[in-house]
Length: 351
Image 1 (cartoon, rainbow, N blue to C red):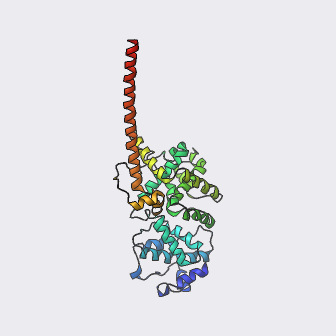
Image 2 (cartoon, rainbow, N blue to C red; image 1 turned 45 degrees about the vertical axis):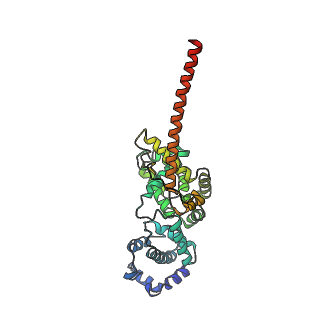
Image 3 (cartoon, rainbow, N blue to C red; image 1 turned 90 degrees about the vertical axis):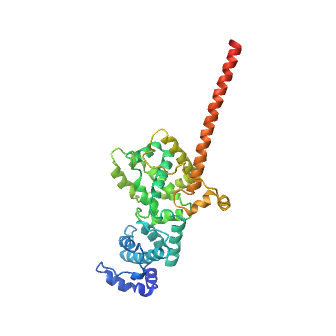
């Protein structure tokens, strides 16, 4: 890693200078700007702040951390300078550092990070993180499906599993204890559906339910205990459980069911586990293009982070709700008709 970092830094030419020059300049904790002012972008300062405190939890040596930080800084600056449609958020540097640490080729690492931005985290890298509320609502729904008490305990104070937000936005890279845990998780996520991290988060919460259900723990203690993943967490078991849950209850069904469930619950009470709505059946429906019909929901969702195919799924939820109302009305009409028939029969035979 150290040799690759030096090659990557020197390959940038005069914009970065040599590694030895940077190390000498940084010895006093005052590093020179790695980019001239004309090449800086809107997230330059934030990235520099995040990089200076990155990679300390991966079990690396001091030299390895220094090399990784140089590579991380140059890669993130290049990505966000060249792709202005994406918005940086704090924690993305942790995810990028895992990929840079795993690959020897800096340019390949850059391409992998770009594809993660484009195919897996597209919505999370929008202008705001409002999508995070949708993700947490769907996470609670997945947990509630298997353990209602656990879901209600998570949301009893109207807060929800906020500790899981960094899990989803950084693919757990901010909260793992070593690089091997991160590599195992990233192997699964990169080869799977963009929502597998959500199902993995649900599996971890269910696996560690004793921490949440312990009456001696208040929310602050639960948040602190749950956020950092323990060293002995059986990731193979958890990933297998998340994959099974994903197969049995795919995102298209989960989102549609949650929208319908929330609509039904709101008719009785004004809240659903004290969390905001994920979808509204009042959303505008749109006609699917032939290409979308051919690709299907699963393939379309590869381009989104959370709640894949939100528009089409909202339409599906509306259709399900309208169908349920029609069936209820028909059932009522049939019941009234049968009551009248039985009444006439009784009159005829028994006067």
